[in-house]
Length: 500
Image (cartoon, rainbow, N blue to C red; front, side, top):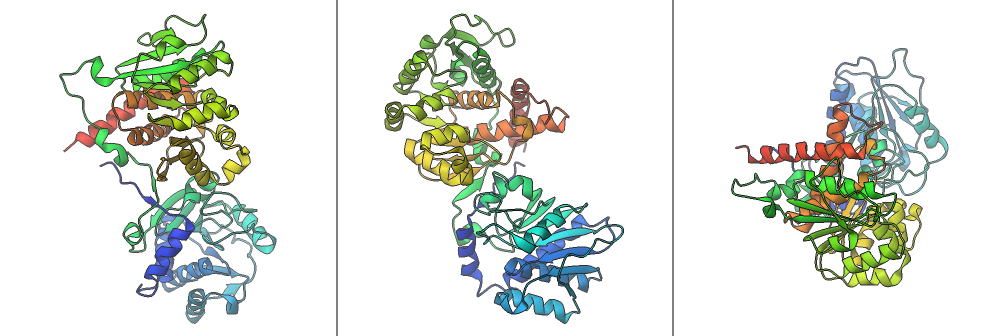
């Protein structure tokens, strides 16, 4: 079965859920969290003898660590707990957990001990949880650096210490986990920017709570179930006209490859016909790799299809501005990428035309392009990717994909999603052009725009993951390799969905 999407909450949402159930939760949430952490740790240490090290901090995350330690001691496992705080300053629940740990004979060391001869079976970070707001420095920063240098599995409880749970920014220094067990629901910072590098393998423990029933989720993880209605087998009585006409416009001199890559992707995702309008008058009359593509002059291609993508290799000269202006004036579903976005970012009048457009609009910026559109810096965009993409979607009344590690998607009404598929092999020229083609191809086939955006982004990353699993990358993975992988994967999903 295609797996279900998981809800995502910012820290404020998680706190609201915790507050709503705190008084009635039996056993208390901290006991549930510590037990869940211990259960996950058992799986990681199943073939690793020896003691485990748990580094506990001065707040409730440390309390989770004390509960976890108590479970292991009661099971007869050797545990070393490092805690440098003042027990009297612990929050009430964490103090109870600390006292229960001492009541079972648990010992405390005030600094990180040297590892045993054969190393730790597991290193656990229970220093700081989701509430961290300032950079970590001093003793705890040193602890985190030392923990990161230890070999073997490293597990973070809830959020790797030093990682902002809302944004994925590293606050000074962050624990680099091989595994993270997070509670109640996903948090944005675990999924985007530096979050995936800090989290390692990520597991959600719901603690016997239905988060969405307590508080409707503002965001969701992208999974195929979100667009499964479109994963239907094709009827026998169909023809090329049944699957729409996609148009790709771009390909200025020296950049025809970008438009051709997008066109090939649109074909591989199932568009009935694909027209590629090239700005380069000396560009190829036929794509020798994909001769099914119908090459046109750029100005002629706009009238050919019901879904238009403009931007791959477009350039920024007067001819590009004229084409973009014409595209914005059409009633077609429109995808803007690359230089089309750069032109909007440097021409306020053109941007205003885009904002006033009534037909559906999709923007697919990387952080630099998003910064130009919002008149900010790339660092500002990256510092809070979720806020940035929501602002773009509202400003342009558009469906926006902010590309990068953990691509963030926002719709005009403020709903948002984070995509987890993909890998570093996608850090290569042309990958964005392939995404643009996938979007045009799905829209041409009649996919609703929201599902087309989610489907294209997830399929794009999942195809790259499939290539990596076959040894094709991450190093050296090329954009031209992705469309064939997309075709295989999409057909597998359709077959899986159709299976009784």
